[in-house]
Image (tube, rainbow, N blue to C red; front, top):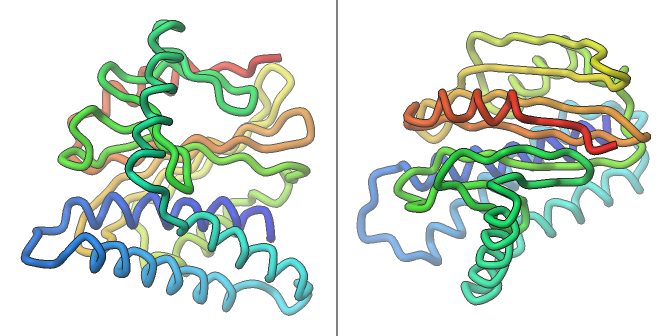
Length: 231
């Protein structure tokens, strides 16, 4: 449960960012927007703690809380810009291919990778388009923990309600793969989520596609088909 908790917490942040950047803006300051996002993540953390079994140790909960703090920590504009420029150069040299923790993917045209607590691939005019691809990795994760019942109930508890939930688990070319899709309205913004978790070499790598505008659905599917395990 602990491993799933960490990945789902990252998903909460991704959906929060997507929702916040698509909410009609008024006279609120950037500081206020950051505070709202942090409050949403804190609420998600509290909700997740409620569904965590009593058998979890204090150490596991503390570790998850520390992970939340790391995710919500804001990097300066200069640091994010530097990372974005570096990653853009790397992906251009590799014809748009990006490698994350042993998994490669060809990013849609116009997408670059940035890192600000969580690793995201976003379109060049972000946040005008907040559609994104997110990346997360957990060591010593267990394929058996990612059951349909566990994932569906946990996502439901986190987001209040989800629709059109699908689940598929299979073995492909020596590694296990769990694919989940669902529709969710978060902060008043409807989104479609497709999450793929790859299990190999004693770890899991989750790549999630968050569609907000719907304009990149075909490009996301092409990127999904390009994913390979770098053995």
